[in-house]
Image 1 (spheres, helix red, strand yellow):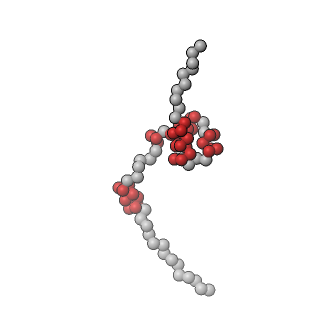
Image 2 (tube, rainbow, N blue to C red):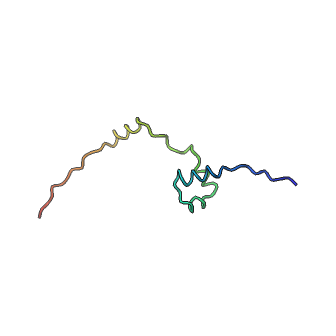
Image 3 (cartoon, rainbow, N blue to C red):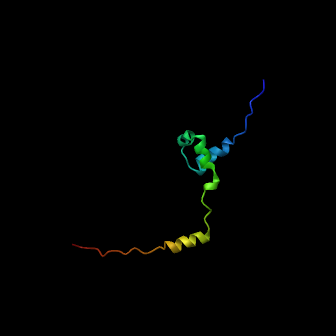
Length: 75
């Protein structure tokens, strides 16, 4: 009788990714299906890393403005 092929699965890395990086509570992590887990781990869908140039573009698009205060109405 031959032994079944048991491929190594990196459980420690997957658990660390789910609980620490994604900050999933344990009950949510363990309820994930393999399809959902694979989708979460796929790094191809992650946004690009933030850069100074990207930050400056956002700051130009959405500048901070001082809020105008209405005069207090003392009626």
